[in-house]
Length: 303
Image 1 (cartoon, rainbow, N blue to C red):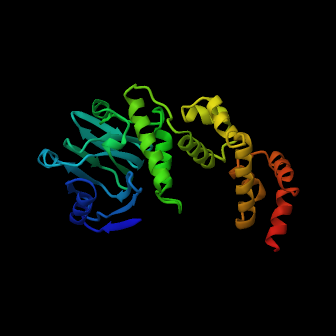
Image 2: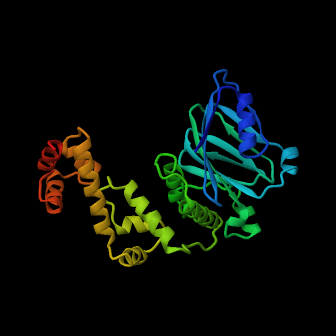
């Protein structure tokens, strides 16, 4: 991972112009400060996580006219609000929303609030399974949880900066597929999953991120990932598994870790693992490990 910090706006302009496209940056905050962390998938997309104070970044017409690259950019808003202007469209991006924009055309990113956190995805337009007209139609269109592919794209793009796995080829391919799906969905084109392995990876990541939700089941998972329940069952059956068994194993693994490595009360451990009812948590844990949660904690902390 490549990381840089800019203590002044002039340094930030140089950093982001080198990382993305030539930009003109400004800020009225005398205490401006910004950071950039960058990950690159082998032969795939580049993800940059930006943290910064109030500022503006403009890719002017003169600069866009000189741009000869093939990248498409996508901003994923994590914290605070920003505004994207391109091709006559002005979008307000709240947390958990995003938009695609094309550096072949001028654009303005206005970040009027402090505490900005965004992820920018850079991807070669030829890596997207989309004709040119579809890419143009998808630019400067707000995306949110109602857009197929966008919720897992947002979650995965944030997760790669939090975990040790980084951005490998498989994750890069998944991000490219999700971005294509989201761009198809936002323009009302047919969308779907072309690779079962990528879909299964997304579903497992989704379940891991939502283990604390008691209502997590196949119906919820299928609905929020825009696939059929039958498809979810078929993917796990092909692995000799079921979604329910997989969720239970992951919940029990998390419970064991929290019982051993944290000082959370047993009831709180249950809540973190999707069991708000202490009796259900204790019974399920005993069925899995032959011990109550309290017995497991006492035994494993004494060794």
